[in-house]
Amino acid sequence: IKRITTETLRKMKVDGEKISMLTAYDYTMSLLADKANLDAILVGDSAANVMAGHETTLPITLDQMIYHAQCVVRGAKRSLVVVDLPFGTYQSDPQKALESAVRIMKESGAHAIKLEGGKEIEESIRRIVNAGIPVMGHLGLTPQSIYQFGSYKVRAKEDAEANKLLEDAKLLEELGCFSVVMEKIPAELAKKVTEAVSIPTIGIGAGNGCDGQVLVIHDMLGLNNEFKPKFVRKYLNLEDQMVQAIEQYVEDVKSSDFPNINEQY
Ligand code: KIV
Ligand code: NA
Image (cartoon, rainbow, N blue to C red; front, side, top):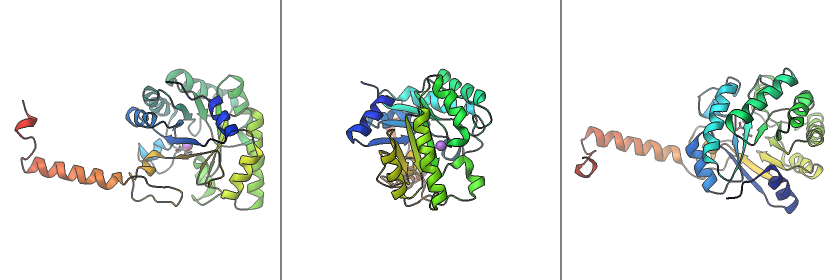
């Protein structure tokens, strides 16, 4: 099997082939996504939400991200594996940012890292790229800044923020990032950015004008009925199916239907 690389993604943009990306946090999900020919897997810090039950992405640690990344890497034979640098491990100083990125690469075997922000973290990005580590940017609704935003509403609807986002995307390209995620921004702006930069843009809630799409795998599998923003397309309703299956198991155990004669030694 031929591994997808950051170069493959660049080439896909040139060829006009859309890039498919989903999150995964564990071996089994990674294995299944890889089997389905997904181009890239994001070990997102959304693991803080969907794996650990935290309300925001802020609490997850570098050690925890490395653990998730190790699990995902074992399952991915073909997909490019990108890992989020968690909150607090790259914003303060570039040296620390480099050390955090190096730990992820060394200890997990992942292929790239992702971090949130533009101009503010320019020096951190420069250091990491200079060390030979592929970097994916992330602009728009960057969840690590949720307490500054105050809500999960669409970002960059006003000109000032939209212009800054466009400038940040160009800066990320200049700094040598191989790609950029744009989260929850107007489709028109995402399309404009996509046309303005040569690196592939990956959208989530950013419309169809991006070079690729990413979703949290639990969202698209329908594992959480409570969460239904309009940018999520649910391909399954796994929550209902899983709860029904477990209810059935409980019933079968209670009624002594399980295990039957063929299910014992
Ligand atoms: O952590 C995450 O899941 C992400 C994507 C939604 C872009 O950063
Ligand atoms: Na993230």
